[in-house]
Length: 313
Image (cartoon, rainbow, N blue to C red):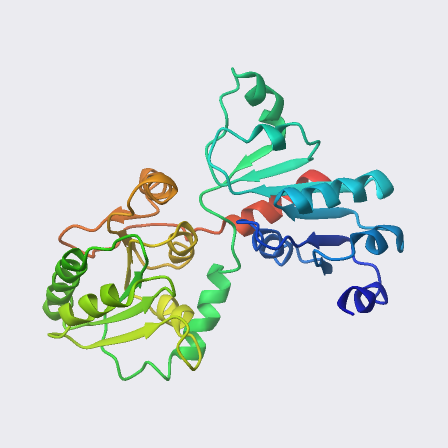
């Protein structure tokens, strides 16, 4: 049993509480991987034995209400610190506001300090630009080296398109592809498409039809073989995020290439797009793919540095 095997390993100072079904479930592991410390991943089953064994962790990372409750149980037993990742947009849900987390990572705006909840949380809330993830500038640099030879036959500039599920309009997808096809031909470059698994097949087909006039390569997530998306991003001359998820948009900004966005729809997708544009991490796609000075986005790394400073790890 996985839990039993973990309990036989030397104690690690950082524990990651995994919660199946939580929207932010991958965020704690992404942050833990950037701390530079040994960490244990604790699955959703059997928390009682985990709590009772050994000396316990110094820091627990959690996401989702169930893993938060388990983290609080660990804190009661071992006095550890808790960093909780919340995927909700502001205001912070009331059920989380009352929890005594030492730090709450929130992919949203900080609540106003004038509100009762905002004043209570101001000192332990860390707003971030998009959900923390494992894609870092260093990871993309390594991916570029790994894929350099396999993509060497493709001309520069390479325009990478991350195609998401934010549209169901085939005509919109075709028009966007034709627009990008013209840009690629004008620059004698190519287009590399990575289509998300939840992107409807007819949208992908319409987009590919619009690229017929230029050199292009298309990968549909879930296809057999190695996923080239990180290699695409690592060697990109420009990235276009087309109706992507918040995480995909945030991952695109981890590389050095300029990031351009097509309409992200409404709700959380639109909110993150507007925030990244406001801080000049991304720009709306217009008539040029010209880059600008930009520091690659690395929110997981920034959170990890803040945790080490705050808790002296």
